[in-house]
Amino acid sequence: MSNWERQYREEVSALASPQQLDAQILQQAKHYQHKKDIGRLLSRVSLSGTATAALLLLVHPAQLLGALAPGRIPEGEVQISNPTKLQWQAPVLPAIPKEDPWVSLHSQVAAGNYIALCREWRTRRKAFADAPLPRELRKRAQKHCRILPKP
Image (cartoon, rainbow, N blue to C red; front, side, top):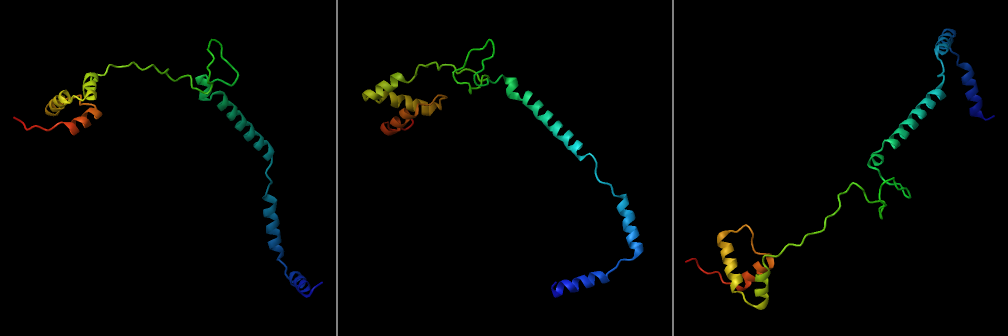
């Protein structure tokens, strides 16, 4: 045994607690009780957590929307080519082509006749019309037409 170990043992043996203090500590220790049935409490918590998770899976909004599981087709429904596509989206309607009101003006400008374009551009500038010229016609008019002074 080394020197410091021997000195430590001597000092520890010299220390002594009073008898009254030992009795008080023993009385307090008798009042302590260990926790019983911690396993039962943990079991109840885990069971309630499992039940909550199962309930959430059963009542999830995807179930209410009728989401398709891969390989499963509900009765009375047509199979979708892409099962990930949401069924509640409205179908896209085909675009209805509109007749362009500027077709004649476009054709005249393409032929090199800017008289009708300049006349239309001036009247639209004076009247502040609701439907202005399309952008490409407006740019050509700014490039080829003179601004005439007001009479």
